[in-house]
Image (cartoon, rainbow, N blue to C red; front, side):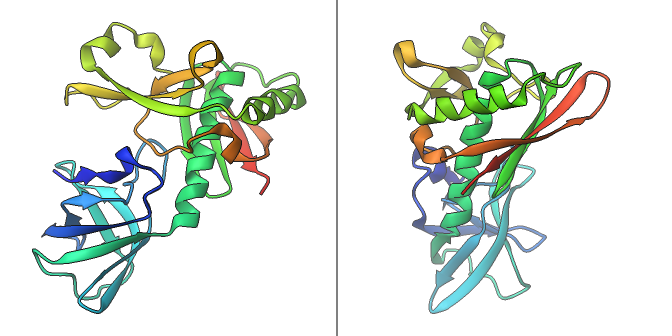
Length: 239
């Protein structure tokens, strides 16, 4: 299996890797990856890989059916051969903005403490869908609460628990539509704040900033009606 370097250090933008396979669709499989594959509402990373004086642009990154990480070339160019050592380089600015938006959405689920039915992360904005019969009465107040949490510059950390521990504490799961992937024996939790300052703890496999202060100023956008019991709340990065 691919060693998921982004799980150990979301700030690692470059790393060497060895080509261990090619997919039928023309993707490149590496033994270790700084590229995050599409999943959990977060887009796959893009960037490039280089070897022997050649460079191949990576358009996106996806998971294969057997849970490998495949780098998808931007053009149908020759692929690095099996066994080749390549240098991976992320489009760091895009990844970092995904990290900021993703962490901000975790905080949005704090100020709107309702079950989450869906979500998506972009470069400049993101959104969460909530089981919310009526639109928020005071969106400005939610905006103020959200930015106040960001301004506290809370530490963002992770830990791992067993599948059994999660089954025993299903209240950690905020998403109604999908459960965290189970079966490997352990689940990654993302915690925002420590001790008495903890504001959020939930399963998540995505990439996040190290402190909430890195998110910067955000603003809430439109709230859409997506059904009798569902509202979509948009969030935007101001810078």
